[in-house]
Image (tube, rainbow, N blue to C red; front, side):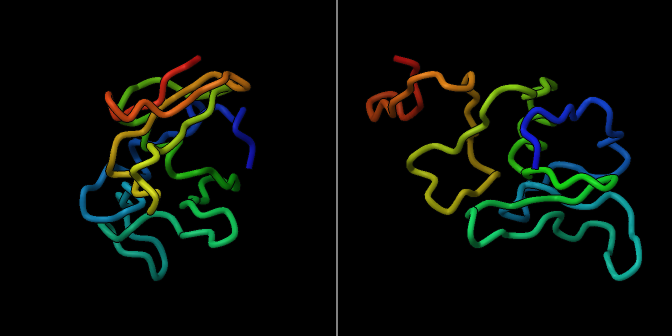
Length: 116
């Protein structure tokens, strides 16, 4: 998986869409093989503890795709992270973006990550 991979080069709208039904935050737009349209997009990677999606030969973290679709901003070169209160890494919840190597801490008062 390459976090620096550009999502702008993939026609995401014709492949996946945001979903409130699944913890990956995504569902398939079209049926293909055994996969049905509207079924959950992505699989849970136990060792890494997050969802990944295989698109056009690339394995991409589902939370990066969800962030891109919600914000229309490619997170290339940045970290997309889950809040500390999101231990299940549910992509339907709010995602945060920080620049690589930025020092950050969780602000419990505001319930979000802040850069220090």
